Image 1: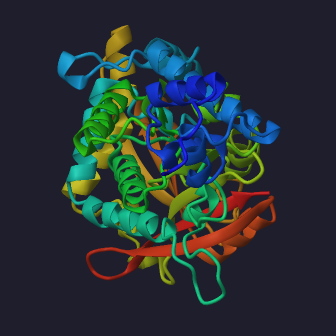
Image 2: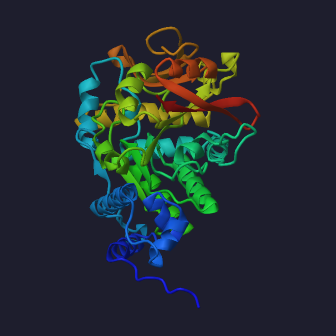
Image 3: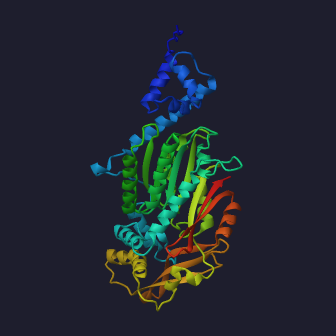
Length: 451
């Protein structure tokens, strides 16, 4: 006759009950919380083990606390179903529409305004969406993001025994460590097409592997509330559609914040901020050539991006590639003032003139005579990364005889940019190229680890 197992201790019964209420019901899921093997959990359930080792209890408590903190945050954010028509957005101080409009007025006396003023209002957001949909080859860039994240999440080992995917390795999916929680922070996501792809691929891969993350957060950070709404709805609809198990809490957090000049207060809302040790990983994404749009790459990297990253966290940048002959870049045609007004050029002109036109209308001024000018800058303060060139987009206010720069749009030499990042404390993990519809290399994705 088989020996009858002893009754389970009250302590273990309570811990297993709490874990189940928080979504960890299977032995494997409980084992991940306690950072032990599934065999250990089976012994807890049948009463073979009466108490936990000190380090196991500490790990269990730490990971339960992390999951509870995540759930508290979800309640604070009031994660409302899209079908109910409510999408809460947190607005950082001095980043809302009124604040940006005041900043725009204050800066009209200077010669540089910047990209964030282009689409923070609904009209600018519509112009941006129109530009993306009309001749921008967005399908190519979305396919490129999907290929990158699939490659970087590959948990298989290479011939040397190393994990093929750097993101999979960092998450603990190489089976050498317990899976971690992940905060994906996207700076300037726009309408969120790339971010939704990244979120979906991570969720699908963890389902295939059966290795659940402790949590998964997508933080969308932009100044355009209309675009944030689109990105948030699409991301939450994806999560619901995939039917993810409760074992991995998934959150989509939209923040209206100026990531180039703001305070970055949203970092306090990330689950990884409260997690202990290596429990949480951050992946900061600066996609869509946003890095090439900021005023000063050095200041942006050191003062903003660095504040979001801790040692071991990851940075994902995609930028436009500088072709061997700059004349082959599609933007080069716009440097010719005699060029025909294509749909792409008209869309950019509408985007660039919009903020000034709206300001004029708001104060009752008659419309000025404006002209959009695109010209090349290289080797000056506007393109400090070696090998880069800047397509500078200016607004010429003819009746005032002055010029305002509305947008920088740089192109980079991938090797030089990678070296520049390494010189500033990053370890370059992967470089991936994306081709346009004519099979020309147009975009490069760089994944780097913060030292």
